[in-house]
Length: 462
Ligand SMILES: C[S@@+](CC[C@H](N)C(=O)[O-])C[C@H]1O[C@@H](n2cnc3c(N)ncnc32)[C@H](O)[C@@H]1O
Image (cartoon, rainbow, N blue to C red; front, side, top):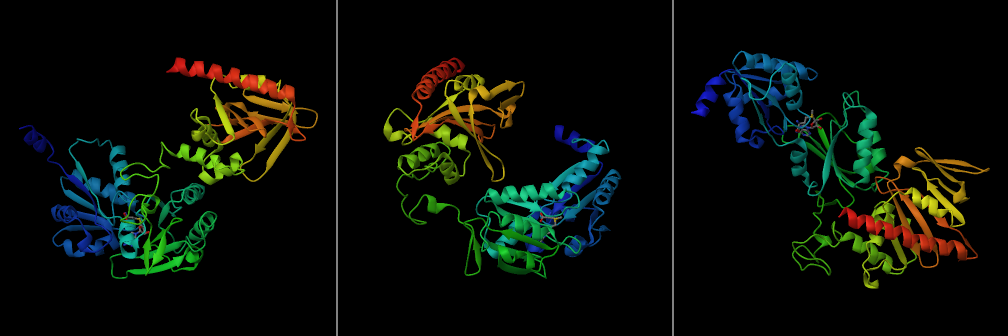
């Protein structure tokens, strides 16, 4: 009964937002075919209308140009308000760089709300990246992301930052809208950014007009990409660090080699079927300590680089060692200071001459020799000043302090930010390889006092 009332109330129009897949009818979903069949009016970009022309017999067809996207949405709304069923069609998935977003924006701005008398249905389709991937092998079997190189509506610095993040994070990339008659430099820039992180021979597949008459594929290396034939009907798939070509197939391994001796074989030592990897979320910090126990002369930065993690995470891993040496981090120990970090600066006044190390985002490292008496905390700034230099650290960026020691080589503190990156660290200075006895004694006493307070605080918070 309720459904009948609902149906009667909604006797106006309907907008079907239909993604019809890459192009061939065989790759359209059953619902996409039905939706076009149901429609009184079909609206779309001329090229898309041509791709489905066999399905349009007896229908009102409204063709629009490439730049008339908002017009297409407005037209769909106008037609639906006249009580018609309108199919607004788009290639691939209409929600992926497609008309679904603009149409909802037009509707909402016109005062339409979900449940009003114009129904909206989105019919998903196979997007270009799946279609293109299927033609060249299995390049997307691990984490991937898609980035559109079109800067018509997105500022280039935003696009460049996304390419950089994807490159750095070892995502497989699918580049949509890679190049047009006017936009020819974007693909060159994308290649330049990615080559900072990827090997020149990283596999790249350039797929044009997947599942359409003019379908074409090129398999190349990343350093050749910019010189290839690329256009608006092309999607570019760029492998990650483990993607390879074999017999013309582009394959990104799923990761079985991290766990099994071969695809069908037993789990390798330390790994269990059906369980997270030893390097999974709950185990990877144990692996950090094991790496340090191996006895090599690794600095914290070496370890951070090896695990591709911020130094704060590495120090946290050290600090989580159990009471037994078998779980320790070799000659490293560490402890967090959770309560007011300013008390560490205060304590440091008894640690004699200190080396302050600051790295900037590029490649410069500053090392200053100071006494903590040169430190002063003024509002949001930690000022480190003497007659030779003035250094100002934004104290609001500091989230955590970590006491760290290593055998008789290192006593110090890392101050880390919200991303667990070290903002600066300070360490006691050794003379002829030996710490000043008073400074060392003060440091050890402060370590005990500061960690005891932290323990009490942790317990009261639990
Ligand atoms: C505006 S986006 C539309 C994406 C579409 N909604 C989808 O989900 O595939 C246009 C871009 O999609 C990619 N594309 C769409 N169809 C394609 C096909 N059949 N073969 C290769 N790339 C395609 C190209 O990168 C093209 O520049």
